[in-house]
Length: 360
Image (cartoon, rainbow, N blue to C red):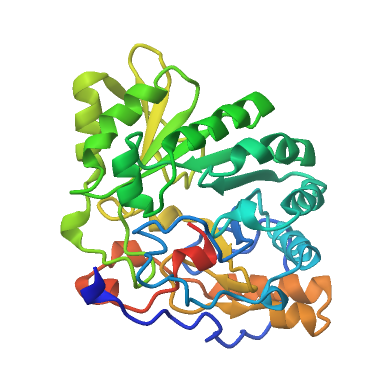
């Protein structure tokens, strides 16, 4: 992929904030397509100890890569203020991401702060590398559930996907520790890239079948501009389901709620369920209720965005809670994103913000 490395999009190239209007009543703010805010992804660090080829390829994020300085990161207090502002618009769920969120020092303190906000489902996505050491403290702080990224059970294939020398067994230990701590039901995210880990699909399903954990197979997406995405590298979710169904018969399950990104499938023998996330072949933009907050405080209204809105500047300029809620509402009112529904070769080549910067 070295023939395709391009410059990373400038994360601080922010859009101008729209004129702030009323913060509105909870749940009343809608974008131009009638979608509400339900799910906030908060990236707490742009650093990671893995170099997954679909997220932070080593050729770009190498030893000389300049990560954000600590002063550029949102503080825990700033994050919590912004979460409260989003909550005024009907927010129901907060997911902490990265980078690798468990690398953020004292993360359990942030979790405890957000956990005090009533009515929020607080979750976290991790690569699981240090989860075994952290799981109990995360649960004690107030984390409710956890998602672990694991692209193969085979060490060789796992290494081909994450590009570091790390044993799958350590991630599995982290999953076991999270289950023991009560962070369930645990979801296991598997990014499937044709030609790399497609043969891991059935073994992953087999391993976690009957465990109570939910494996979700994700189509390789053109997030960011440095992962060498090509359509021919995408293994359609329909093919994933076909492979698993041939060995373990499946039946479709209704979504838990409107806007759920994963299509659910249940094993016919009652031994649990799996999910597929089909952002490329079956776009779900029309029901997307997600908003993203970058490590340094930019609000992004789409995973495939090229620019965000600078909320950190507002916070540090002394904006009131009402001002913050008003700005968020005004931004959301302008939202018309539906990238995956209009994806073309041209849009795929745009300099989109990197996933490690805004979380997946």
